[in-house]
Amino acid sequence: MAEDLVQGELGQLLDILPQRVADNLRALENVDEILEVVLDLGRLPEARFPSGDIALDDQDITRSDLDNVVERIGDFGADNRAGIERTLHRISAIRNRRGEVIGITCRVGRAVFGTIKIIEDLAFSGKNILLLGRPGVGKTTMLREMARVLSVEAHKRVIIVDTSNEIAGDGDVPHNAIGRSRRMQVATPAHQHGVMIEAVENHMPEVIVIDEMGTELEASAARTIAERGVQLIATAHGNTLDNLVMNPTLSDLVGGVQSVTLGDQEARYRGTQKTVLERKGPPTFDVVVEIQDWSRLAVHDGVAHVVDQWLRGYPVAPEVRWLDEEGQVNREKEPARPSEASLAPWRPNQPRRSDQRSDQSRQ
Image (cartoon, rainbow, N blue to C red; front, side, top):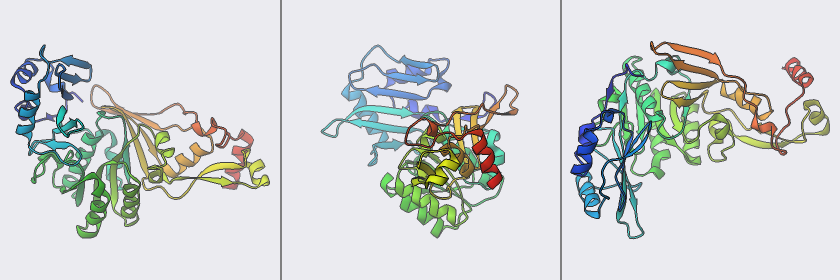
């Protein structure tokens, strides 16, 4: 990713920090790599980098420091988040019981162009794509770039449902990093599912982009959007497809899971216990992408089949993609992962090979 053009309005973020903290941060050689700045009352200010955390000063943060930062930022939303207008930075507050700000996390936002080269074929395929990964791995950055590419290069009508203004930046004018995409802001996270439906009903999109889906209502809204033939690209909480399948809140995104009681004959035929787990319905998303780091990810294409295999105890082998030093995309099949569905006593046991051959002959 070193050759990518990194465009982050870092100076505007430094301007809201205490002067001594900002000066020490500017003096760092690797300041362009910073992920977050953390200011907690009575503690040393910290900068978080991919390589680790460092202290930015030898003096603790005072209440006056925090008050000055809050004054420069303005009001926080109901989710204790704020931003800097026309930038991609996100500022989050920690409050005490009296509602006073006692901690601030400043996450550095960047538009990284070229980040979807590794899954560009999937983006242009029209399939519904779900991005998973740990916090800070680059889900939102990749989501933003997919919105830009589809709106500019594919000339599609793209609507972004921007829950915390993290995709298109703070303020009423969206950041240039989203290209020709349009952005709908969300008053509070609890209203996100309603804005998702409003987007498809009122603005005739071809693609809807959503960040941080995390509730059953949002999962239901996503299904409604997909059923109307609109391409859906989103991120969700979870690191792997396995996590998502067993998440009762979000499992509907990949078809849902239900417990089924088999007859004696069918249980013997399958080589399983009588009570098994099966996929409840068609998945909302066709492809699940597990982002492992900035230049490496695992792709599960054909989610319905993958989930069925996983629930029946078969090993799952995603396609791993990575960028080499020359920026070329490499692909290989990851060694099959043992299915967790075969480890718990209430889940189906892994079928014998003879059963697998019999199943294939029935299809």
